[in-house]
Amino acid sequence: AQSVTQPDIHITVSEGASLELRCNYSYGATPYLFWYVQSPGQGLQLLLKYFSGDTLVQGIKGFEAEFKRSQSSFNLRKPSVHWSDAAEYFCAVGANTGGFKTIFGAGTRLFVKA
Amino acid sequence: SQTIHQWPATLVQPVGSPLSLECTVEGTSNPNLYWYRQAAGRGLQLLFYSVGIGQISSEVPQNLSASRPQDRQFILSSKKLLLSDSGFYLCACPRLDAQYFGPGTRLTVL
Image (cartoon, rainbow over the protein chains, first blue to last red):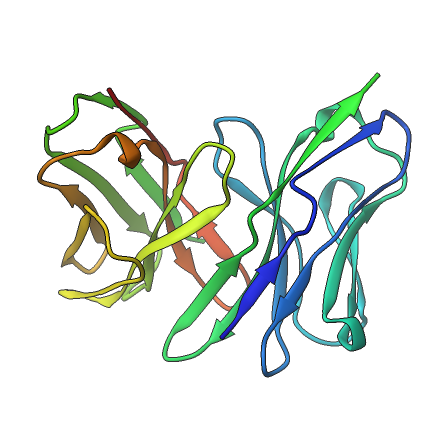
């Protein structure tokens, strides 16, 4: 069965510091992988996605993620965090099994300190 | 592009009262539709998904039910709410390139 693990429930970084949010997935075939961001009280916004090709994908707001098949990982990175990046981040894997289904990780809440 | 609407945006209900949350989709036909719940401090839990009118699959046993009376309408219901039903409910439409989400309904059960 497909699953997504985000091992860090919350992370605190200083403004201007680099960020890496971890994501590991379990899926038998080549996965569709996504990162979403959710600001407090809001819906989810797609940051970036990986389907195939270049394993380093660029997203909005200066985020990028790297797909590593050997590690079953899809970690999200940003070189310099801004206070407005404080939010909850969800990694997700898409599976096409009798209809397209997206499985989400539990999320990582990012706190940014001045 | 498609747009997902959810109504209401916020709801406060007493324990034991009924519930009806509505999700409607524009800009696409015959969509797959999902209901997710996000409880405080927790991730997204898939509750129900529907591949067409009258077709509902439940992912977890619970106090809630779903219905798909029209192609672009998906309704989440309960006959008697529990405290544990509080949370943020999101309707979503998955596609290969992304999953589109509605703005969500914040439900508080007192």
